[in-house]
Image 1: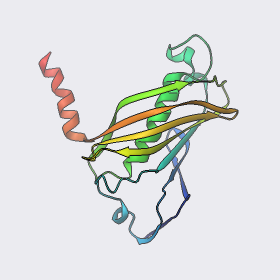
Image 2: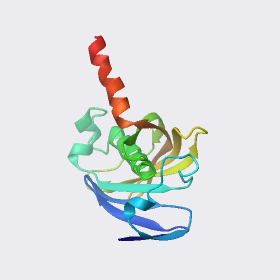
Image 3: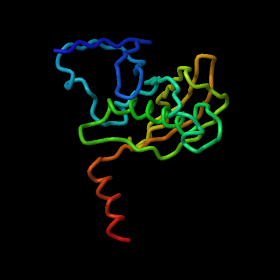
Image 4: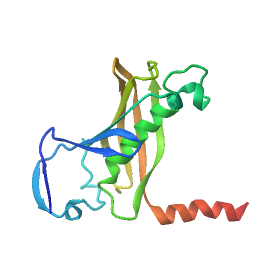
Amino acid sequence: DFCLSRGLGDVYKRQLPGAASFSLAHSTAFLYTGKAEDILPRRNPLMILIGTKCRLEQTVTDALTAANVGSGALPVFGTPYMSALMENAAMTCLQSFLEEGQGSVGTHLDISHDAPTPIGMKVWAEAEITAVSENGKMVDFAVKAWDESGPIGSGTHTRAIVKNEKFLAKCNAKLEKK
């Protein structure tokens, strides 16, 4: 059995592989006791909750620098890694609303990286669902990132909900056309 209570401002934290922690917040209120799989919402634009937030955090290492990835020459937190952390937060935020066999892919990312972060400092990104398309296939997010000294980036992100197998089949069909 599984017990979950959600209320205004509630935040749930879990550990994720590759990230220090993950938290998910919902802006609705309910209490459910039963099996976890029974409460996962099915994909329906009315079921994806506007205002749902997810936060991911990690510590900057040499592997996460602009110099290491090639996007710059300095040993500071690289913009590609900040954008990946923002996208990962959005993907994680949305995944709990999807049916088995569904996923999401990023289709648009418009961000600014406004402040440098040194190796050894903790960074975190937050994604908040701001809109769902009428057909329920496109989801918009506000994304923000911080380090221990304050804000380091912000912007918007859009993800498309896909059927994983169909999406991969279409992608891999490109190999047959070359």
